[in-house]
Image 1 (cartoon, rainbow over the protein chains, first blue to last red):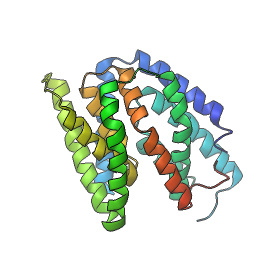
Image 2: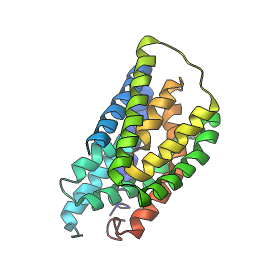
Image 3: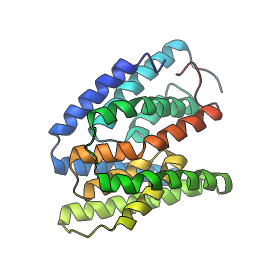
Image 4: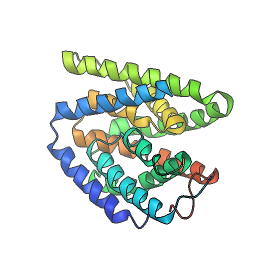
Length: 46
Length: 199
């Protein structure tokens, strides 16, 4: 099933790669910190 | 563990493939945070974990192709072997220590590091980065990966804090975690979280 979804995976990766090139550096760093804070809170609450 | 119906599995796989590809390609992480909880609405938690793990291993070569040689070689040399050491320590710890305690430990470390990076980013304080810090973080990221699929919460902000470009952060983190993802999928297969139908 996952192998059949490869075109979607490729499409998502390509879109993500394009978005990465356009993201401002500061916004990118803040997004990573936001993901890290949310992820660590999720770990602490489980 | 009950197997999901074909329609549900197809829809979940399509969603997982697109979202995992987009997140890996754009910010390099957040899949465990954004995708796994959504998939658990339709699939058993074990299936959601197994499916995400396998989709990630399929995404690795695509991401590496897009970001080929854009990684920071020095950081990758430090992170690649140390994440493997961390995975082995993590697997060893899981067998002898309560899972929730390990998750909390990693959550505390990740939260402290993220807040530290936030302070560095907002106040523009610059600190020197010694190789041993990267090596230590590699071990922690490997442990976080094997225990909670959460290596990205440690690696992403750290690499961004080093001043690497957006592409270098995704490329270095992605290349460092290729081995971790392979080991993870093998372990999911061995314990039945990943089935032939999901593949």
